[in-house]
Amino acid sequence: MYKAIKTILCGGYFLTTSLAMAGDAPFSSTVQMNLDTINETVSSTFICLEYSGRKNHRVYDKRIAGEYAMYAYSFNAKFSDQTFIEIVVNPEFESAYTARESIYPIVYAMGRVYAPLRRGVGRIVLHRGNKGLHAGGYIKDYGQVVLYLGTVADRLRENHLEESLFHESVHAAWDKKYAYTELWRAAQLADDAYITQYAKGSNEDMAETALLVYGLRTNPDAVPANVSEALTELVPNRTKVIRSIMEHEEKQLLNAKPMRYMAGCSS
Image 1: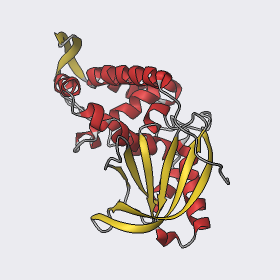
Image 2 (image 1 turned 60 degrees about the horizontal axis):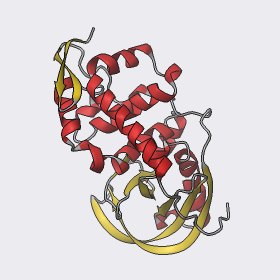
Image 3 (image 1 turned 45 degrees about the vertical axis):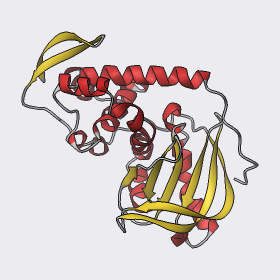
Image 4 (image 1 turned 60 degrees about the vertical axis):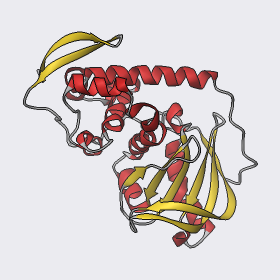
């Protein structure tokens, strides 16, 4: 057992409190766990890309530690559930063709990401390099995801691109809505432990935990028993909150008005 547990009622929610024992944060990160929970058995909703020409965009780039304006290749990615994402590709990709070929596997994988999350991503930015993947900066009510081609290639080789995009989409779509709520903070305090070491980092807890909860919820055969046990025993309250968020978001999606389709696509 990871913990000794008891249950209390807090704000209408039953929260499990416990004395943390040795073995807290039993995993390094969801990337290092390399779980292939969103795999080829999941159909991609991606339909096509529409090229909208070169446009000026202000983007974030870790390589220069800040934002700057660039005249980027611009696309719209269209998905079969009537959602779309603006795509911004750094002009360092030399041509619209190279930009399209580089972004294509990313938007195809994005079509496998949990629909309520994908609907909250307004823009994907792609740079060259290997500076990880990250999210942040809101465009109206939508978040954005910033990617680096070298890291994307690594995640593709590891069969972990969809899971990484899921993680970043949590930051883009849910952090602002849920990660700073009293309910989430109370669940963190009641659990008093983390599922991964990376979850202990600034603002990574919800994204790390949500990916594992989603995997257990949708593809339990791909989740090892020790991961399932850790969710149940180490972070039961956050697991419960994330499940309730997912149920709420799915209902919201069912009742949402269809988003407009873009114009025709060329691929």
